[in-house]
Length: 313
Image 1 (cartoon, rainbow, N blue to C red):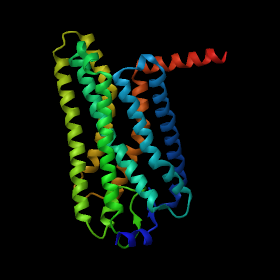
Image 2 (image 1 turned 30 degrees about the vertical axis):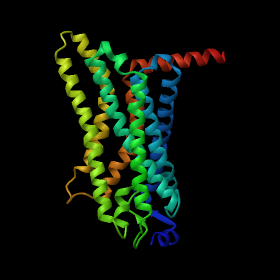
Image 3 (image 1 turned 120 degrees about the vertical axis):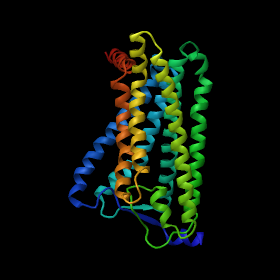
Image 4 (image 1 turned 90 degrees about the vertical axis):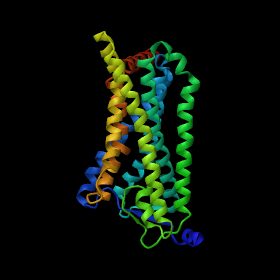
């Protein structure tokens, strides 16, 4: 059956973001601008945190990885989506679909883990400031990034292998603008229920475990801030958490919106809206959140800019 599936099914048809022809061109222009901002913003953040020695701290180490994940996630989705706005039939080959799904799972699960690691980093910075450099050693930072990448890769491979070695029935039309486990699993002839149960279990574990780390970290931070006697100290503590807290609220908000919907109102259309948000809007917003609200990033940017200008002069 697996061999039959591979020989018969060579491509899928993606439904895209919208079926309305009059919206194709305006949406293409909007998403192209968003993608350009994503590339410039996240690539800029990666380069800036790498070249400026002032940003060689655990917090910016995590921000660099977050920028890499956001850039990867949107690059897996956006170029294909943009191409589908200007072609008549939105097709994707069987293997390209598998690769897109694997990469998407890898990046989305990694983002949850990185946001948790960043919350823990802020907890150590505010609750144990004197031991911060000892606790958040380069080795721990690499562990907090490396293990989630391995876990995400395992999950991406598991779901991709399970789905793409199964047999698909009937239509090859995917009710989405990219290949994902949720719209693909009902298309399976066998193991569809098992696959949906696995998706539900892993999604719940990923979301709840990472959200729990974030909530516990921020509850402890809040208690520590309340115990501070200095108003300046409280303001400084809030400002160090502001950017990350904004990113967390936006990201988890869009995921919870998708997962917490009642079954009666749940549809692939609302899934598409939420997906656009966390695959394109959030990767565009994150560099802006971390640069506009952060003096260190602004100073590093101006410093690099001055150095480059001097070299050219």
